Amino acid sequence: MHLSRTHHRHAVGAAVCALLFALTAGPGGAQALALSSAGAGARDTSAACRSSAPRLDRTDEGSRCLSVSLRLSEVPALGGTARIDIEVGTAGRDTGVRLDVQLPAGLEWVTAPAGLHTATHPSLTPAHGGRVHRAEGAGRTGHDRPWRLSGSVRAVAQGPAGIRATATSTGDAEETDSDFVFLTVGVRQS
Image 1: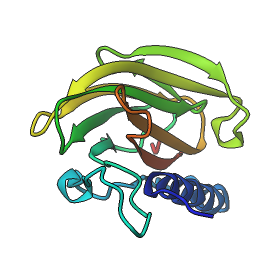
Image 2: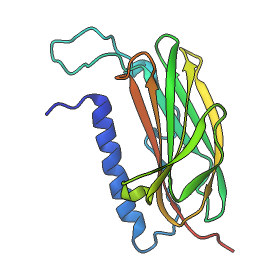
Image 3: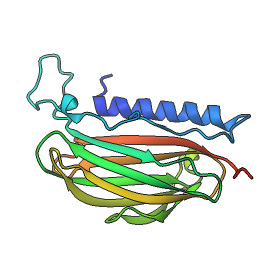
């Protein structure tokens, strides 16, 4: 079975999420843990941007110029808030982008990023706690002109949580990228 790099990254992200939830749900799970799949800094999309010309080895499935980066200012304790920063970029030409940011049931939007519309949907994913809070919308990004957004979230339940941001090109649904932040909400220390 052949996985594209995007599908492979999603599979790896899901596996990491499951592992982190298993590790943080046990004893000592109230300790704060926040990780981003993008690392400490913004990703360099220029190295990942490839020509859409077919290659003989068939591992290149087209252009991969789009990137999304998700950051949380801090891990909020129960009842606390944190700022969430999102950056969508491309190493290619100016493009329209759809953005979908998902919060599990244990987090809720205090202020959604400007231009995104929020809604709550049922979810069968156990880590979502029965529902997912989404912020969705469209914007534009171009080479050296990232689309930057900020909002704030509140922790409303203890336990592990995962925030996911997915950016998809409006001109090519295969052009997509996701980023994740995994955390464990604990009780506020007195």
